[in-house]
Length: 281
Image (cartoon, rainbow, N blue to C red; front, side):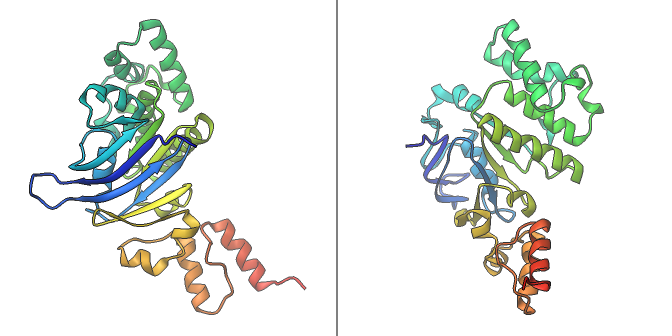
């Protein structure tokens, strides 16, 4: 049986005692090497859920486990945050040093990692995210995408088994979004790191292994992208969009074109339209 990296059991969370919970009886798990996208409209509770997975918040009800460690156990807090690294929306909020190499070293210093081991971890982390050439650079001179990759390197140096990204590409331009997403997907595939990717970009979610849709603090939909996104009307009821090609396919089907309801990408749309317009004899 596969060990869950993250296990959420009937979790609810309220910001104040007696207040209405913003997360309500959520249960989910994330397996090793799995890329899970979490979607939800503003105020749906998805960012609160992310903070519950990193022990920034402790559930009002239920339990969150990171590799079997209960996030309510104060004595395991450092171990939990070392296993479940958090990437925030604004990379400037995570960068604390004036030199890239020193910023990546920050978390290791807090963990008391010996100096010689620290040097190797820093080099490896920067190499993994493609930022070795910027080791001596000032972070404020980097692009948004490069800053976010430095923030990821700082987490990787601590050797986590999970990455939790809360709108990590929201403040980046398209090229920055693409480079950060590619970096994280490579970590998932090649390093076996589990990823919880909270986003409002549907094309990013379409690349996930699994999609979880949160609405008013509860799980409203979940499944693979090809199971979730064809439910166009349901997604709109939840105040969410679907990938552009999925929406276009739905409109073309309504106009009578025989297209699959499982189209997610431009390439898939191209093949389907070719097949519809030029059926083989």
